[in-house]
Amino acid sequence: MEDMILQVNHLSKSFGSHEVLRDIDFTVKKGDVTSIIGASGSGKSTLLRCINLLEIPTSGEILYHGKNVVAKGVNAPAYRSHVGMVFQSFNLFNNMTVLENCIVGQVKVLKRGREEAKAHAMQYLEKVGMTPYINAKPRQISGGQKQRVAIARALAMDPEVLLFDEPTSALDPEMVGEVLSVMRSLAQEGMTMLVVTHEMAFARDVSNHVVYMNGGVICEEGTPEELFGNPQKQETRDFLSRFRNN
Image 1 (cartoon, helix red, strand yellow):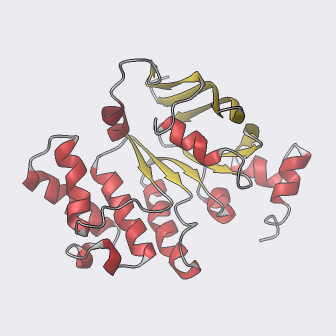
Image 2 (image 1 turned 30 degrees about the vertical axis):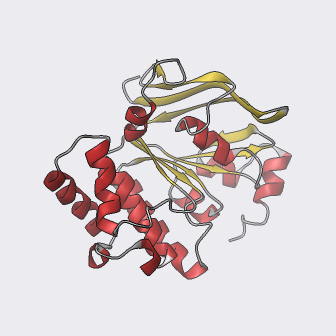
Image 3 (image 1 turned 90 degrees about the horizontal axis):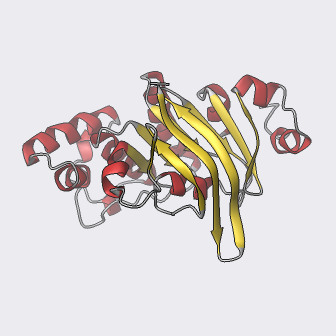
């Protein structure tokens, strides 16, 4: 069990009387690339936000290395430094340069010295191809470039797991490829990733585990070969039918 990083047990989330997630169970092991797919409104993003404690589950537990992070007294920012998140809308600080965006969390949360944080930030900005833009503000770069900065910022915190919440859905089609290629290379390097995505080719070709959600529950999960090649449930087949000939 040493390679088990996250275990989600009987997780449910309601907003008022509206139940968004119901009795969710799944696990994330070291090196897993898990894609969560499903129609809009099926609870995928809410699940990710619960895992990162941006939303507090109504019931159930989230175990990080066996410790329930939903329990009282858990230091959420410290936990989030291990479980990083890349958002659909980038969430960069607009008043800071690209480089500052990648330094500030390291200094404030990880208490790194500024020079160490800067060196670390530069390492990851180079990895995502953004070193020419370190002095630019977010408004001066494209959506694809912003998302690559957001990925570098998350990586600079040295997370054990990276959560991606539809990282390409706010991008123009020509920018999607540049972000997916960064994510592909992270997967090849063994980064543990949990990706909510509409990019079926990525889910099929890069993941080792695919989860199909519908109506706030996990309908079906398995390897990409199982889910795309031989889905067991009619609703999974219906959802995938438009992608399976691609």
